Image 1: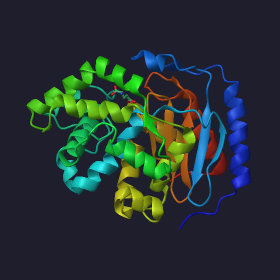
Image 2: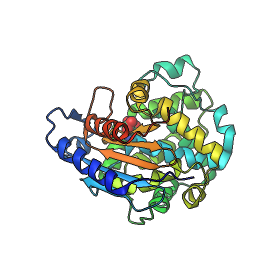
Image 3: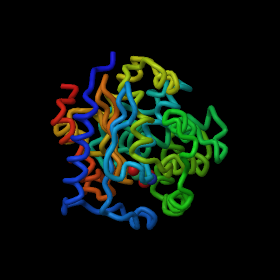
Length: 313
Ligand code: GLU
């Protein structure tokens, strides 16, 4: 059952947060591993809430598209679970990694079975699973299609420049994939699998669109959004549990402590947080902390969640 919410109160909280974030001087640093991300102006901040019943509420740069990067791993997980269900967990674990998202050391130690679907090797296995079931023809990427349907926004697209750069600089991800191929945990061609993964990372969305596209995770697995995503109540709970424990790189424990909601972040500066039975919150600001999480997006979600008493605890 959706909880009753006070739209005017949320709007005023978002306006207040957006105006304070505009004056923040400690904004972190923009991701620098590809030029396309390093050129994104640091002074931007947007926030949106997509309540379960009602239109999105937003403030700041909530309509500026940004690279969703690792946040795409949530949608990819939904697609892969739709194809293979719980058998996915034979190939990907469900433990926080405590290591950076692209660590190779842990993968070798654990014989090619990634700790969880939200670190890069886990997401690459998820891409492999998706490709085993769908052709992955460019232009019809299943993750892109799902984002478009959930946000009801057919114009959502892949940023081709970001994609080209990801491919060019993606040796570490290819190395992870080759290692897993050697261990028998990748079945397809490394080039195809990693390009499919890079493509989903390069999807560009606004805070408003992303909040609408992730709202299904607040619905308890019921209603029209959950139907589009093809998730049951149980699957919804489990995806939220993974976001809570593994969604913010090796700072996931710290984020759970500070915010108390399932979250997923990406190096484009976006953070999604799920307030069950209420809706989805997305904040974006391109400056990152040393763990790769947006400084202002986390701060804003923390303030909003505390101010409105949204926590799963
Ligand atoms: N495209 C990035 C990579 O795979 C994603 C990083 C992220 O957002 O965690 O390196």
